[in-house]
Length: 143
Length: 143
Length: 143
Length: 143
Image (cartoon, rainbow over all chains, first blue to last red; front, side, top):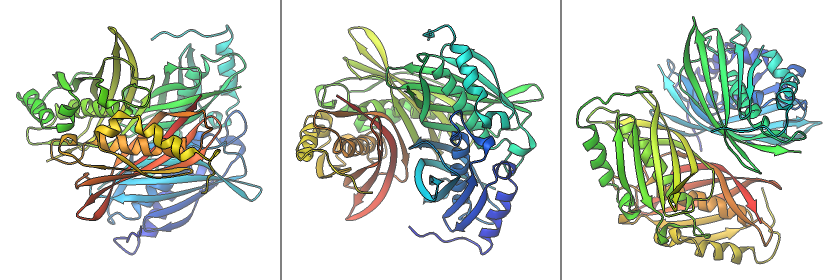
């Protein structure tokens, strides 16, 4: 599905908001792609962000997927609007083992009052990628 | 509902597993209570774990709620078993504003093959608590 | 948590809306209790509403739980407002075996723009009740 | 993603199970397509299966989506195995207005112990289709 941004500076607005999330800095996360209705965030699986088996903690996986989905939604909002997560469901598909996570967020349905979003999170290990999580949720615009 | 642990050392096993989660250390999280079928985890809302409005990031809220729910499930497992999150749904009830988060996890239904769990996350601000998230999900035992 | 209705006729409004849902009639469902922030719906497990093992179909369980949650939300709305389900998550706890289902819906958080709700569905078999499903979701008011 | 059935008669097994679900008959539902990892179910929006605005009731939408997802999972199981829904999340995208619903279920990840599934439900109105719901959930094989 194709979406259109409502103003030219949507990508800068998204990146500015991302840069203000201190947790994304703590995670070493980068926004590597933004388009109307989609965003991609990557982060290394650092030693301090793991669970008891040295895989990425589900909290890291969730944070990246939720943020990628949220910024996909934000890319379609009016200039003055922001978005908040209403609810998010995550299915964990495989252990998040590897060097890096890649979260790809996308807008599924952009309504006036709510935006339905999804995200997929991949783990990169020795150059091969494995889908580790699938998210589906709802964002709300706030002005 | 009342649950019974399957062996005496369940609390030590849970605390040992918690101590091995490096993300919990990074978050400054503490397991402050464990009982058969329930656990409570707290963490300060540190400057590095926030979203763009200086509230706790949903990734932090989720990580604490998911972990509290997972350790509630682990408290009921056999000595050799661990648990993994299959899926988790979070509804965000209010901005996570304050000094500290408290996540209370509990087992809803403990089956042989799956454990249904829930968690509530509260934010503490100037001594007053606000419910900021409600989680419902599924854990699977692994041996 | 205690909630207050916004006008005296809230119970009549809820019952009128329920009576207009033809699927509830098809299911033989009855609204047996309504209070501010809560509702209870019952339905027999009829021969035509089952899955392949003669248990209640998850579609029936969901329909009753979603409706009980929705009417719990509606009980708190302004006189002119209705509610729609935004999203709903259901965990199935046990096979829905027996003669009747009882769905108890409740409001968890009533916001200006969204209402977070929950529901529990019980199966009644030979007078004993078993929890068969737990729902958590979001309603939106429409005017 | 491509999946392979584990035995030749998978489609007959799925159709036999579907035919035994009395709720699907009550709904006038038909299984119109089955392939390894996917299934499509249609049903008319009959007068007796509606909510208070004469749209399809969310209970009908859920039942079709959950069944399409479940049969997508069943198509990949061993001959002697069945599947049960563990949990299912539905986001409602638009009012289910029209003559017919079409539910397309698919397997996202087929594991040994759990199967992650998704479904999309479309409403057909005057020949035009609208996405009305998106489901994401978990099935468990039983033998």
